[in-house]
Image (cartoon, rainbow, N blue to C red):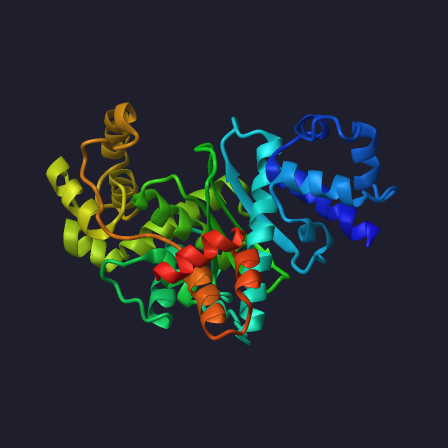
Length: 348
């Protein structure tokens, strides 16, 4: 019990993004930093008064501190910008772990046994052409076709991939990994545009599925995952049908039209044109210089589709509706107060 409490306290503090000193301050000095350190090392147990204060300061329920650890996330491919602090990284990882634990618990209540299979596990990736071939195989195996993809997040969830959307600093792009070495996870920033969410989700899918040759360095892996994402949104056959085999000039209006149809950024479209030899490297460099002043592509069209992760909430409502779990338990899994959960539940 003491060991679980120690680990959970440390996780809750990381989840909140607090140092030990900041936690003491939030608790109005009820305990010392030394006491917090002893709790986290499993050398001392908090009494009920301190437990309540810890729960309030860390914005968790008291039973969180005694919930056994059931999920281990491994093989994490983390993409971030240099400005993202180490403390923020820890907080993101803990939030993902907590979300996945609750996700899998709901599935257990509903007796859902998800089993993920990678259709391209045997495709060794050495270069861009290998990526194109892998994408064609995957689209065929998953029966997604070569037309514009609708809700990418929903499509991934249908394939037993756990997608987590997080409120996170803009310096965080996303990451992928495995829960208990068998449940694939894709994490994306909730604050990004739909176009960026789509590309990021598929980029992370690339990290999960592509079997890169061991000689390929990390920087090249990232580029090939980016190519994978672009190819998933616009396979080679589709791209050349829209753009042609070879172009000397491409109008902005044309790029905007494709962006709004396929939900792919103008920058990704042009990168794809360069990769497939539709435009020259020189033309692509000139484009990069032009778009550098407007990386957010403001005023350059808008994709009006939908991208959101709803499966966990749907499963939770189902478990509560069928009275497989109590409203109180459902609220706990939703990380909400009972009154707030009841209100959302009744609204549905």
